Length: 98
Image 1: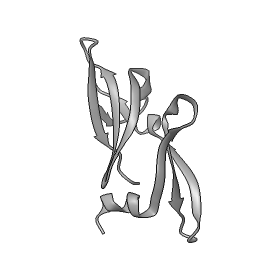
Image 2: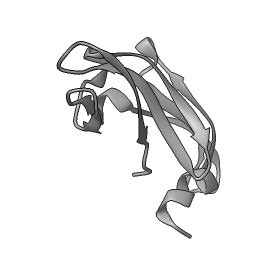
Image 3: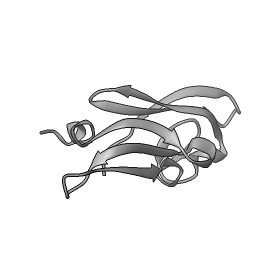
């Protein structure tokens, strides 16, 4: 099994949740064999670097209108982010399983 496939083999029902919708939530199969709801704060994982999503923190400070795009085996974070000329661009960054 490829690492990217792992996310879809162990989880489902992905959506953005929580205040500001910056957390990726989903139902995941635990090591105990039971289903659990879990979430990861994407705002603590990605940043806007001049209009490009990069590993880091606080992308929500300079991006808006973000959502997830489910296209197995990828789960993309799609956001409108400002660059150095204050324009908005549609960006896609694959959300990788931990």
